[in-house]
Image (cartoon, rainbow, N blue to C red; front, side, top):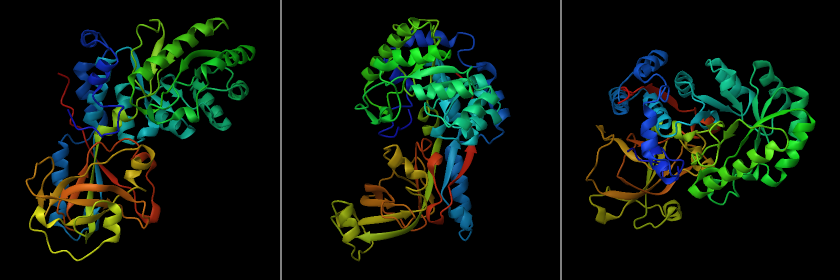
Length: 457
């Protein structure tokens, strides 16, 4: 199994998650043989490769080709730039795993996580739904041929003109969590298919507490349903999101129980719910939710995180005081250091790379991600995925901007690197490209695509 980012608790290993949440391996295995459980398994490889029209080399091969080009044309400024390798085969494998392990739950990809065109095209080809939060995201999904019925406008507080746009395009499914939103929807899309978003948890067991902004406490849901009834609106289901990076499976179970209660309460107001949206988590639902209820989820990082690997160039370095203990020492204690000959020399380094917190590493700020560096190329030697016996030295890694908060890691450990060497970071697809900026005039990092999917075993 691939390494996972330490705090990406919406983990890529869905098998482990389903075991935690009590989904039987036998049940999951039995569903693999069900027609449609994985869309057109026998033709999936051909269909996706035809639609994507991209290379099929391994991530390592793409990296090697780029390094060879860099070292053969050292004066080419473009060859020195940071770059991603985006493996759409990883997205496909994640989708197949989802369909095998959670056959009842329809994935609606959370576009905000990684709105990369190739990821969207891949998932559209695979037939996933899309979770959109704005007019632009809806437009993007439609441009890739996604049927309006496969889009949920999952923003409880929407701009009026965006509601009108969704109505004009036939995107009728949308969320709400307050009475004012219901009145606004009544005016601009009276035929909307509404999903009431409830407060899934108190947020104490998640890295990002989305309940601070969205979600109606279950206690006020009856009053909202009464408003919807009075306005003659159609409420078709209930949704929740326990928060990004939830690390307690019990929270998911509690949220499903709360949603099940809302489904029953809705009957008192004449609403027969047909949908449950479980947000970004994967709870066990079969014992609580009737089988006629359509269940969808809004996975983002599950699909995108492991599909992207980021390569960065060491553009500068500083040798700093020996025996440093923390980043403050690294910053304040620079001294001249001889080139180290062994770990006993206790050197330390500050490395400056050509992507940072204002670019692809914004995930550190917004998503609490811990990014672990590895050596990609050193002194012209390609080292992707290789183990090294060289001594390692304490280091900090800094982005290219003039802002002192532009620090990727404060307490790293790497073999000694020189200017012109390369590092890489795995699992860099989620909440990285989506919020990257051009601060200080640094351009956004380019992407090289491949598709390593070889077929379904």
